[in-house]
Figure 1 (tube, rainbow, N blue to C red):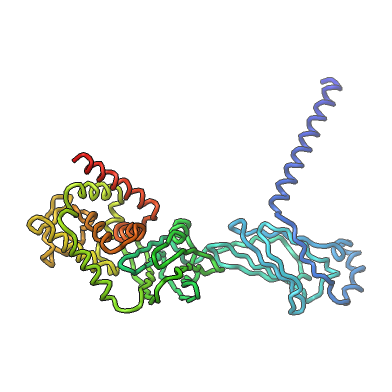
Figure 2: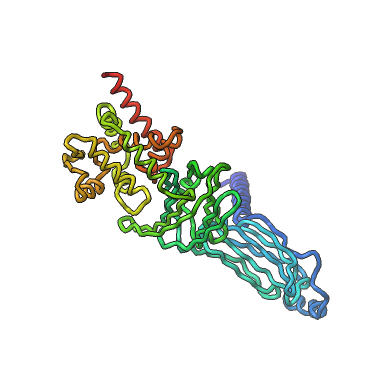
Length: 416
């Protein structure tokens, strides 16, 4: 190889080495995060360390006593939030908040007293808090704080509005411990040591009814708050709660109901009158097209869970609707999509019909007419029907399914 080629090779090698070092420096800077100076405004009071510092420096080097120190803090999961407290003799000298990864600049040993300490508290949504405290006169090393997930998580949320009453159901892996906070604008439901899934977060944000103006969730340390904001014209409400266990899906269910105060008899009477006004035309002809299309759009398992008796406040209304379905059917016999026929006037057959009510021909459209007789506003009608048929489904999705079924029904009527 000629001298010229050796020189060219050397230039390329140095250039590559330079690029690699720059890349390594950038990655190192990124992994160390931002730089935060936690030095208090004034050093610790004068002490014997000022006399010993020159001697120590002879043995350990001048940087040991006179140079500022750095530590790098990481959390698992990455991006955890950090609270940092600089404490001297029991008094807080400095407090800062940051996000990991973080490089913390600390004063030199000469400026640090024997009772100076740094407390780091790390937390992230869905994880337990973790704190560590160490004296600043001891050896300081980089930290990795491993956060432990919270013991419970809110996986799913469903809401129901019917006959003036709203019920919110929270589905979690473990039984909930909760407390209720009443405020001037509504209620805060605090679920202790509970995280929230993204699906549940979206469902909470979409909870809405004539009683609830809007809602949201907020992680408060290790606790989760679900805030229900009431409308300005909301009546005086009673808050009722109930806990149950959904064995097939292995979920603990915690329900909170907002019930207008006073007797339930008026609401029950209004519902019975709405059922009595239904006629055979509500469950025949093109109405059955709506019934069939909507059934096909909805998930069979979710529909079965929604209509099957489970101790919900809607159970008596659904039983009454099934009995009315029998009254409006030929020979008082309700036909199911699998060919079964049952007579709801018989208590035993009524329970059999309720266990498979999602498959009863005409039952979905009967519930639509039932809701129309109870609610005046279209928005409330849609929400009530969603609450009966698909309480776990978001309103936007249910509205799409409803529109498709209505479009098919209109085509049927236009072709007659």
